[in-house]
Length: 415
Image (cartoon, rainbow, N blue to C red; front, side, top):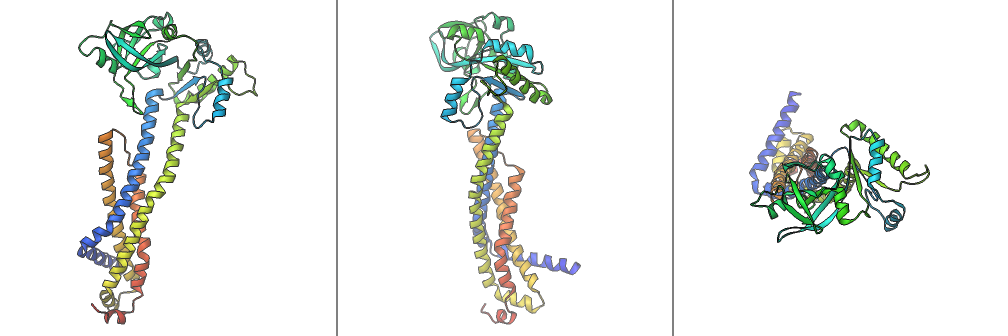
């Protein structure tokens, strides 16, 4: 056993010495592996980052353990025919539906109504374009994770009595009230004055759209200004994860009863949860990974071919050395070990350098465009392990070619 270990370490020492002797050639050989590993890891980090970004956006918009009831709510692709069928079949969701659910769905901890559109907001001569105007129940601040840093959110009595009050996002505060106290001042939306009673904490943006260019007002106030013909949405949430599925089923059953649907009839409303959206994101990013990652792995195969080519050159150059080792008693497997170790070390070193290069690229992208780049342990192991495996696979032929050299022929070869 000790003899075998000694022979193995001797083969390792010779392989490392050979790599160090030809540093420039080794580096040029590594370039293919470095680029291949960096490509795989950066692509993987982008896919994981996309998944993280979308899920964080969904969580920021919907919150955890949340669901939405709307006239049309659907996850995934929908054909034009299916869309038209839903438009004909599905009924508008109303505030009466919200009251009905509140009375019958005790598993749901919070329910709130919402509607909205895009309108311009005004303060004096100042104008804010394309402001997201949201009419909601007072409880929406808990569902949407809205944090009021100045003033307060409107109350249930203000929402029930359609008071002309509003809570504004940070973009409107910066635009209209940069040097003023916004509390108690009036802005105009839809030609109607609204008294500012609160300012929201900055929320950033999602999918390139600002979450701070927004005005929240009581839903009945919104309906008084813009009309009540449009369908509303109902959002709900459970505090306990264990009750979530039961709550969603409870809401579905209650809505079907509310709309007098028979067991054989399809839902005439949409019901979608944050979990369904996250599952769709998982499937989407998984499909991207299945297509893109194998393509980027091709660059690793090219790097492996380069390794094999260099190892064949190395065998030719070191024919005399191989002959001496065989004459001194080295066996075939000792020669095989030597060249396989050399190929593995070359490829694995390239994988490690490529991983570091990918980390640098991911950091630059993350800092410059504020997009999350997540390098997971799975991609790290796959990149380095795959590169080492490529080295061994493409080093087998040169190693066996070296081991089969006749020592007499090798010793008489020109040096």
